[in-house]
Image 1: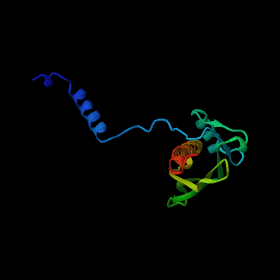
Image 2: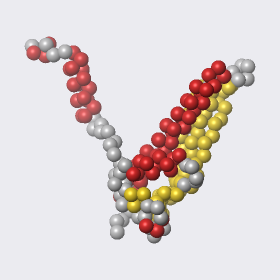
Image 3: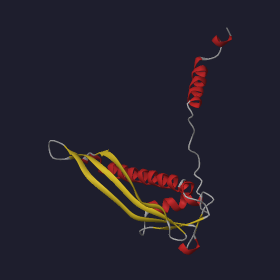
Image 4: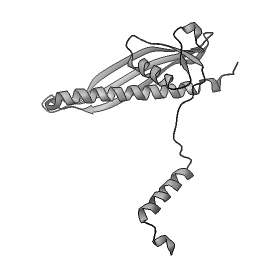
Length: 170
């Protein structure tokens, strides 16, 4: 009985790995963008556009400074944040906020043909609130918005990675 000598945690870990690999689980990995050059237009100071540019620079896709030189044009047409009171205490003080981030974008090719029609990514997060911790809650809000921006960028990149597969290549 050799298996009695093997530590139980090792066997448990091996069983988990086998179960996960058997179900077809695979990490997403890096995104491959099917464009050589891409031009990004966005409202001034857009944190989503800044993060998208940074993430695209990590791929083999180059950021074109002029739209005429790009294979694709990504336009962020709308970016808005909302903070809504979700619940109040019996004394009328805010207990929870709902944070919303909405980003609208579209992608066209060099000839102006629509590759991705105007699409929106809407994200929400719920944040508890306490007047006694105002500074901490402001920092938490900033972190939640940054996390939502990162999620939006990931969703847009995944959509960009699948654009040309659905259209005929030239």
